[in-house]
Length: 429
Image (tube, rainbow, N blue to C red; front, side, top):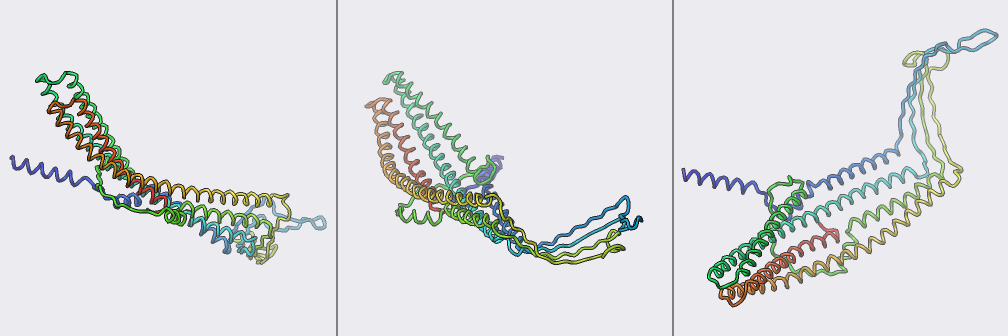
């Protein structure tokens, strides 16, 4: 029975271990891109833009219209000749026709609409690209926040462990009458605070995992974990090269550039009203007294025609002119917005690079400070056990060590987060 119980416990442990999904950074980013609703929305917008483009393209081709009409008159139509009524038609009348219309010249409107729709399709693709970059950045940040939260919890656990050990020493010294009761109370209060901090750190880790799950479109309570990344490579980036790459690759600049082209084409579209609109048409029709309009005793039963239709708005009291001027000002506005965004992109790249460099320097200083804080706590704790120093000094040393550990992990994972942000500013996933 004992062996069977041990086997069941082992199998249960294996099952629990198997149920937890462990993600690498690349797997997390790829899965988020595949599942995230923001990207799915962008894909649907792209499909809609593609349909709109095809619709504008089809407007260049002929259209075929069919119409049918059937009426029943209370009295048959007649004419009066010499005082007598002469029947002029049937009381039942059916008419149907087929018309083919081909645009010939629409003031460049149709071809311009097609070009604008083509640019709209390109913009939708760029919007999807922006969504991918946003999701990749957010997923990376969520990933490293889990790692940071895990380190916070680890630090909190170590702090509780060392303060419990310190409390045991304090209780022995107090029992032997070596320290005052006040020193013992300080140790107990410090341990209680550390336990509260550990509870808070545990909850923050759970929240970080939930945020990560949402980024991957998983169940918010899914049991997930991530592979730790403790190393970082010293990278040297050239600011001018980064800015050049950002100006070339940033989707927001590509999008504004295409919108500016759309706006310029919009001027051409507005000016299309200055020109005549010409259409050619061909029509076949039948008229008769039966439902299919095949019998007609009073006029020709069928007819066919071809022709050209011209429409030209000669004068509109300045409406077309001011509409064109409005579009021209839209072009000016987009031009200024594009120039402003270029400057913002440059500033964003510089800010992200400075943040990355700061994080890299902080890792070096924080690592050295952590080494010193550990040694300081070791010595201070040893001195306390020998009653060379006070409990306050031990608690302060532990507090310094905790802060040094937190600072180191903040710098380490802050570097990875800063690198993710820098890549986003230059348009890289």
